[in-house]
Length: 109
Image (cartoon, rainbow, N blue to C red; front, side):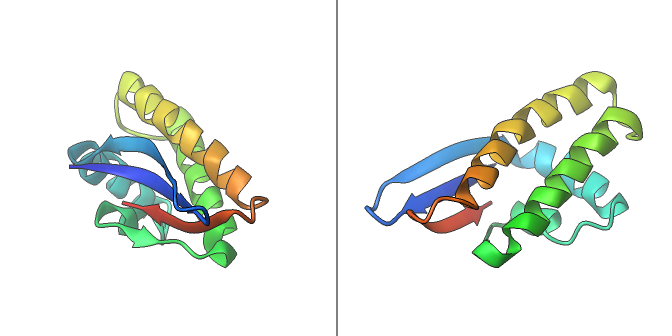
């Protein structure tokens, strides 16, 4: 299994942006997010829809996670760099969604 951002548009098409494999998410991202007190990021292990009003919180949690991986994580640097590189396109897409009324649903999981 894997964890991904899935955007469903009002015209019915989906965009799929891979975030990580399930094991990486559960063993690297979730424990790191817990250390930061993140609320949303652990939920994505099983998958949940994200309402528009929660997007800025989700974006903030991902941004904080990248900062954590860049300076404070106890994980090897190459793992932190690889995970941060996978988070970057998800962040870009989430930022676009905040201004795109054609996105009908945001799902991460």
